[in-house]
Length: 173
Image (tube, rainbow, N blue to C red):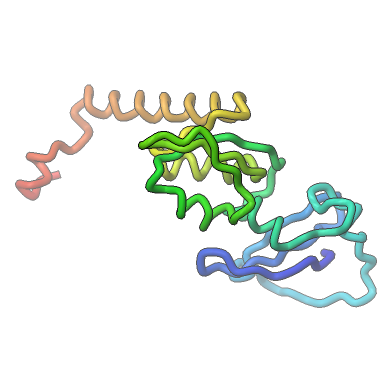
């Protein structure tokens, strides 16, 4: 593996590197590694040749802003609507390289270049306060998953498998 950097994210440490049989950047949690050895004689690909690294090599600050959950997938320009109360959360998560527009009393639209899986996870974590507008394909994927989740809850309710508030408050599940 070709070393590109170490970073901490949400209390976990990651090795950011290139696994030599691929031409992209990978993230590995250090606490999940075993039998680690340094091999000085292994050739390392130049970082500027890796997909997602850019022509000038890997900019770790930019990479971390785009990969907020440390997922590996394609980056895209995403537009999403958030509740105004989440503006500081958006900046904390995606950094200051975001653009705000279409501001109302309740919502604001955000544009950011971000890893698509990270955007999907962010929208899922903070739904319904975060709604993806673009890319449409990603918005459709998140909406379809929300519909499947809602259908699963409806099925639980119809079969009586979902604990009601009354059963929980009486100590019965």
